[in-house]
Length: 339
Ligand code: NAD
Ligand code: UFG
Image 1 (tube, helix red, strand yellow):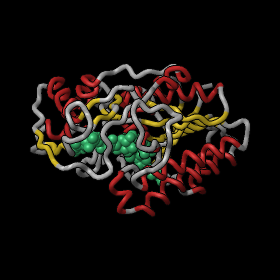
Image 2 (tube, helix red, strand yellow):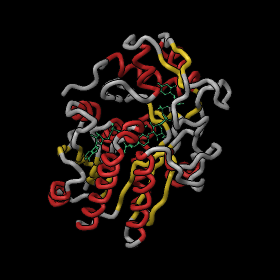
Image 3 (spheres, helix red, strand yellow):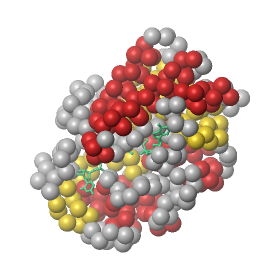
Image 4 (cartoon, rainbow, N blue to C red):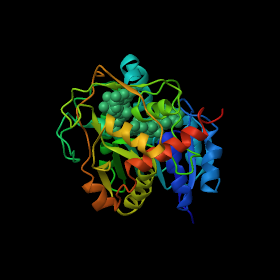
């Protein structure tokens, strides 16, 4: 019998790529997403790339009645919980919206899992839960000191999930702390589809290279890094997706709750990424140096040892590949998905 995975937030950037990998690995997939930051059009792309169909429910995960109906109707083996709001700046302006959505989504999901006896959970956490600390960052590094409400929702959700897992010995949870996912599916049929002007570096670079914006603003060149610009651990979204499939295997054979970094363990600066994009695509990426963005740090990159040892996972695709794939998506779908 194929296993059935409930994927909350499965219509989003990371969720959609993960659904492809799940379907191609023989899992049945049920998405619960309210489309607050995604479009229905992504579903046909997932099915086309994977060559299989999935089940979609337009549901707000904070709505326990609606979510319960999904658990009632399907024998769910495990849950991957992507659903959440993720814009750092917006979370500073609208803190209550972020706390309500992200914490209630986690609480409601766990309540349903408890009610229907589903014991396995992979949670989308973030490197943002770490306190400012030298890189490479291992999972036992100090946590907290988040600079924005979004980060605190991840920190608090981790705590809630750890407590949920602790009180029943059948439960198993992995807290997947992503570093900086970028790129797109190699087909160019799936990618990141930010609404409005992108906040993050990679989709902005892709649009500059495509001529949609005249130049990139580099947020500061006086950081303590090799060229003065901020250093991050960029990871191909399809490597990240595979990390979730590996996490499901781990959940099958372990109980308890464990945080696991998903990163490459290599840091690249803003200008490294700009030059990599130019080399991979042959397109110029004009840029100007601007002021620092509040809350940014010099450098963050992962120690990915635990993922290698416990999940048997390592990121395989390099920065050139991330840029080439992201550019393919950008050129094929400059306006993103339909509807
Ligand atoms: P995304 O916005 O593309 O996807 C999130 C999805 O969740 C969207 O489709 C949105 O419509 C849905 N959603 C939000 N609130 C919901 C609710 N209450 N009910 C149902 N659906 C809801 O974001 P993403 O980049 O794919 O990120 C996925 C997860 O990974 C998020 O939890 C995010 O915080 C986390 N994360 C992302 C990054 C990153 O850089 N992209 C880094 C670290 C962690
Ligand atoms: N940057 C620019 N110009 C831009 C956008 C970004 O120079 O237009 C720089 C930033 O200053 C930073 C780097 O590019 O040095 C990366 O910035 P991103 O906004 O792409 O990514 P962050 O590392 O700031 O944050 C991302 C997610 C967070 C998540 C974090 C760790 O947005 O949600 O990675 O996983 F918490």
